[in-house]
Image (cartoon, rainbow, N blue to C red; front, side, top):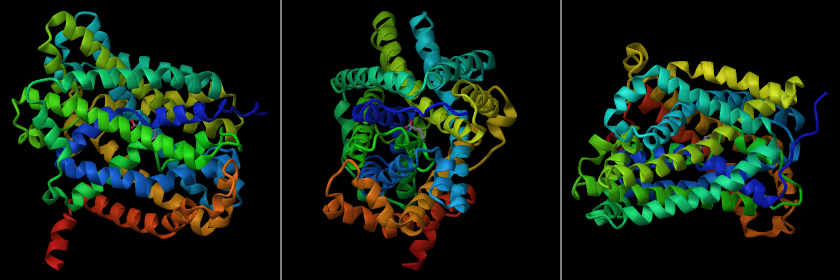
Amino acid sequence: MVAERGKFTNKLGFILAAAGSAVGLGNIWKFPFEVGLGGGAAFVVMYLVFCFLLCFPVMVTEIAIGRKTRKNPVGAFTSLGFKNWRFIGVFGVLAGVLILSFYNVIAGWAFGFFFEMVTGNFSVSKHFGDFTSDLVKVGTYAVIFMSATGFFVGRGVSGGIEKLSKILMPTLIIMIVIIAAYTLTLPNAFEGIKFYLIPDLNEITINTIGGALRQAFFSLSLGMGTLITYGSYLSKNDNVISSAAYITLADVSIAFVAGLMIFPLVAFINQGDMSTVASDQAGPGLIFITMPRAFETLGPNLGAFVGGTFFLLLSFAALTSTVSLLEVPTAYIVDEWGVSRKKAVLIASIIIFLVGLPSMLANGASDFFSNQFKIAGSSDFLSLVSKITDSMLLLGGMCIVIFAAHIWKKEQLNEELSNGYEGFKKKLVSKYLNFTISYVSPIILGILFVIVVLSEFFGVNVYNYLSILF
Ligand code: PHE
């Protein structure tokens, strides 16, 4: 039958692995372009509010469910005695498969850029479209990335995932701080900082709010059971609340520094004019086109070195996230089908890779997948899957908190959270968590989920209706 379940060596190992899951393309690739599209600092403020006030309780709940049951997201609900609620887990595993299917493609681009730059093709960014439409290249890099992900997941929780995160996370932090320190010295850097940090409250619209919440969920790896799965490998002696606080803080800080790294650069390239960011530079190409332009100013050798380092950093950040995404279906297959970990990894990786083929074709390689999926400002298959999964995470998060507060019941949750945190029930944080997950999170998540779906998939601008009403 099933071999013994894995375990993180200690709390630090868990925090680094979970922070590794959180910190990824979402922070370095997605966050800056969402800020660009969302109007700058106003988006950042909303994002921070959501992360700390709304998402943190969801994270605590996910970890607690995982640690209590020691199961994958599907098995967890059955094991608590609520078989009818396992649809949340099924939905989560499905979301994981879909997210990794396109995430792996972009991670492959990042790795490809690193490889091309250090092997002499420094100007790869000038031909971004040629690069993404070269199926052989993009396919090869995606296979390499998926194999690396499978390799580490196959090695298990402490021997693979934890070890990888312990090396890559500190490396990543050092690299990102160095690059940000450099870009802050560029001419016009201050204009970028102003765009990024001084909020214009007029920029806050319903779409900014919905976008910030989607971003917060994606970035913190919430809503699909990643943290149920990682929580299932956490020891009963460890404090869930403080672990979740560190993970949130690490994720938010790295996204924040990524902004400090990128906006000065955009300002430098635009000679201080930030007015075109939303229209011209925001979007998936921001990192792959704009960043390398700044590296070019350093000349071919130094430029290739700094550029190579940057894309290596991006690949590292992506790898600790792809590993967590693959771990969810893997844990499901191991727990529920009684298959060995290595076999489960192989099955999950192959399925995900195949599901990702249309996304691989969606940036030029196939006209159909690149242009025929018109929805809310984009027309390619990859953006469509990304938008669908963003909404799935909000829905998943809402169901998880409703389940924990009203079905499993708060008393059980509090009991679990008291393990590793003596006196938890008397603390203010417990009152706050109980109140938020019972009422605030379900209501706000529910409303914003509906708004996001209406505006993204049905083109209904709820904001217009609201302004008519009030
Ligand atoms: N949080 C990851 C990132 O920011 C992506 C992710 C989402 C990982 C959901 C796991 C689950 O890149």
